Image (cartoon, rainbow, N blue to C red):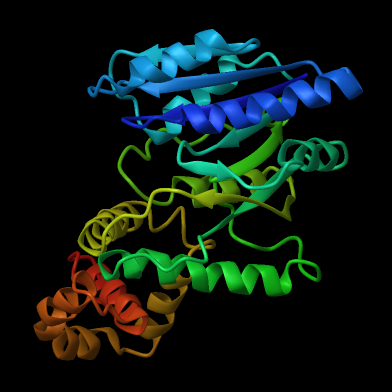
Length: 298
């Protein structure tokens, strides 16, 4: 049985659910697929959750579960694992758009031979307004690298929770770390935990289109929160985050005091660039490093 699991918060994922339901119904007729789709709302305050609930109630094999209080990105996924009845669990973020008619089929096929399968995120080819450029080009750079290398390197990529399939017996053993309450790196930690338990993460070119770009300032703010998360869990994340490995190399060379002394006075100017209409990705990486180094532990 296939369980499609979508955690959501303050977002209308009705179109995503409807597209997935259509694919599952087609597969059910041709392959006798047994499936369920579960949307778990993580304590939304906005009444948009009621529209999602109505959509779920109008479709077969669909369940809407609502948390009265927000429990966080990791715990809501663990709760979905507990609710799911299937032996194959297909997770995805709320803001994906299905772009291929065989999206579900590709995951089901890959799940027959791999315990953990990651799909990928793509961005629209239509460039958004400048105030969205930072996240857009950041993701575009990763997307191009992935598509160029995936055929020769299906493993070794960072685990991303945007869309992935996991065998239920694996998900029951390896839970998401619920200490990760605020934004950032909960999926990286999950990938490290899976590998520590001996499970290989297999990546396939099976995308969802990202339908929710943050504006530049919001993305910078979320990145700052992510750096705080990274700082708190730097020991646990050391093997999976390139920024931490870079910091370790700088520390061994005794360069951190110099970088902080020379770079910190320019952080506000860099941030202004990143939040403006012409953000520079190279400055973004520098800003992340400086912000991390100034969290008073290096």
